[in-house]
Length: 563
Image 1 (cartoon, rainbow, N blue to C red):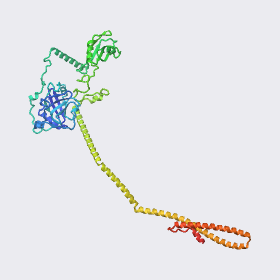
Image 2: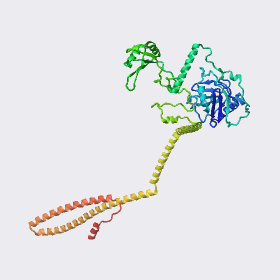
Image 3: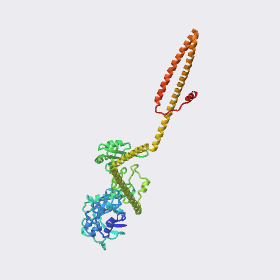
Image 4: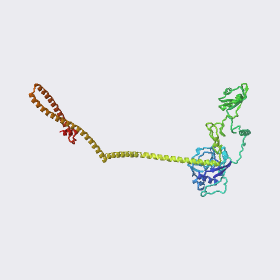
């Protein structure tokens, strides 16, 4: 979808972004259709920035949308589209002027430089210039006053719509022919576009001669530029450098610097020498820090004798050491691109690392066709849409995270209480389970079984002890019986001895006395043993009271059998 805008200095063809900006493009097309922009003045032209038009009054504060023209001044402005975002990234873009809060009327402007980020988000880009870049260069070079208003009028003469994809709004009336210019539209002009300007009117002969000399100098500079001796015809040599010639070959740089330093501080002083031999070529360049010092040296040092030679001094015309910054930017100042040189692509920039361009840069900055630019623009739009979606997703995620954090903070105390209650419940369950297991019938059976086992073990141990005691007691009783039998035998033998003593000798008496003593000693020992055994048996009987009777040992059985 294209529109041709005819101006007093040439035609401009614009491709409109009808898919991205349908409402804004409809407004612009319908205004072109009713010939609203005919004879509109470019009332603001800022070099390297914008060229603005679209106000029928030519003042800069008028204009109305198509709905304002049809339905009245109440609909003078309308709200333009914001998405997808299209930036003022290159020169030659057509953008509708916003009156604030994204409200659009009829005024629009062309961008005259790339990367105008200050306009992004404020004004609405609706198209791109595909033909007529030389016309925009002429508009950019127009002479303007301090308010950026051109001295000579540049106007839109006619608009042609190549294709209209939008239906006409209600009550839309298209004129049968282009309307003639009204005095209201032509009253704010200065010098008409078709008016001839006589530069020599009212000037003296000296001024005319100076003008002719300037024209001749410009023509020569143009020839030198064509030949390749000058980078640009408008380039001028520095005014603080002197050219010194007719020098003696023995004169050195230090000698000249000492001589010329009396006029002011000398920045550089160089005698030009042959590259191969190093011999002096008998001329030099002296650069001063101040222009006044350079002028004083020019007037004082011409035809002065140095090393037996009369030198000649003049202002330098060489630009060999001048660093060319670009057309219209001179030799000093910033590297900003203030010139509208290439509208199709941004100006090539030098690398900071090596200051040279390589082959990849040349291929990158080659001029491309309009179809390729259109594809690239669509790709940029798609990438921008992707970025916007990702940003919206990030915002949504961050919002959800904040909500989750708030809920977590709100429910943190409840969650802690829940955890504590769960822990208490688990502990109570564990205690109850332990109690239930402890008091279970199986546990009771096991406990009884263990107690019975312990009891049986104790009983076995006590029975063994009792058997031992019984054996001891049975032995003691057997000994007693044996002792008693022995006593009875001894008594019988004693009686027999007594009887025999009565009939025996004294020797026999002594023998009987020894026998009696031995018998008495045996009786005393046997009585002591019997008392001890009786005491032990009593103790055992006391300890075994209330217990079951033990089985009789083997020794007792033998004793009973013997009995």
